[in-house]
Image (cartoon, rainbow, N blue to C red; front, side):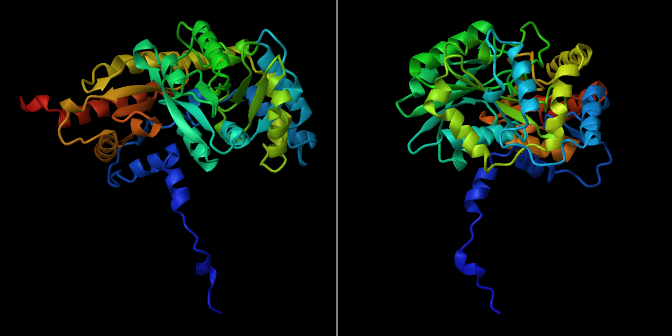
Length: 419
C-alpha cells in the first residue's frame, strides 16, 4: 500500500527553530568539533551538572529517603495532579522557613523539575498579544517555552558593572498594558550573582508600580558562598504577588531526580482571586507529574538533610571559584567583570581584538573544542554575543587543567605573539 503520510506535510522547522534555544543542543554542536584521536580527557566547563563528581555527591539522607520510599511500597501508584500532600506540605514548610509569612501546601504545585515548572507557568500566563520580560543574559529555556506559548519576549539588561543587578530603568521602558510578568533569577544563572535584599525590594516595588507579576526562579537557592546571603523574593510577597520556581536539582545535586515546584507567595491572595491558582491546577491535570517515588522521599529529604552537607557544598564551590577566578585573570582575552558569589557559573567577556582567526564566541568555542578538548558555552545562547559562560562546579585539578588548556589556546591564537 502506498504510504500517504506525506500528504500531511510534517515540518520540523518550527520545532527546530525553538531547539536552537537549548543549551544541550548547542553543546552537542560544539562537541562535534572534538578530535577523535585526542587522547586527553575531555573537560566539560559548559554544563551545570556536577552530580557525577565525587566531591559533589548528594547527601546520604537523600539517598536513604529514596530507598525508604521504594521499600515502603506506598508510592507505586499515581499521584494527584498537583502532587502528594505530604510532599507539598514539606515544600511549603521548607519555603516558609525563610519568609515572614506562612505558605500553605495548597500554594505548592509539584512538577518534574524546574524546567517543567517554567513550561506550566508560561502556558498558564499566555494570552493573545501578551508579552513577558526576561533577563539578558538569562536561561534560554524561558525563551523556548515562551515561543511555544506564542508569548512575545522582551529582554531587560543585567548590569555587569553593578554585580549583574537588574536595570530597572530598562524594565520600565519595556512594560506596556500587555506585559504580564517579569522573571528574576536569583542566585543568578548564568552570572553567578546574588541579589541584595535592598535590590529585591526595589524589584518588587517596581513590579507593583507597573502592575506585573514576579516570577522568581530560585533553583539555585542557598548556593551562596560570598558576602551576600540568599534572600528569597517571597520576602516581598506582601508588596507584589510572587510565583517562586524551585527544585531539589541544584542544592541537593540531583538534577536527574526531576522534582521541582511552583509556589504562590501571595499573602494578599491576589493570585487566587485572579484565577491563576485554578489555572495552574487545571493545567497540571493533563501535564506530566514527578515520579511518585521521588515525591514520597521529599519530606525526608527536605526535613532531615544536615546543615553540614549544605555548608560543605558551598565550601567546595567557594574554593573552586576562588581558584577559578584567579586563574581566569591569567588569560588576557578574558574579561571577568564580577567574581561569582552564588550558583555554579560565571560570564566572561571575550576580547576578540587580541585573537587571530576567531570570528565570534561560537567560533571560539568550536575551535577550542577541536584544539584543546575543552567545552564551554557560547554567550550568544544566553543572550550576550561574544561572551562565554563557564561553570566552576568541578574538581579543582580538572578545573585548573581546563583553564591551562584555554590559556594555551589563547597563546596559539594571540595577535600579541607576532608583535
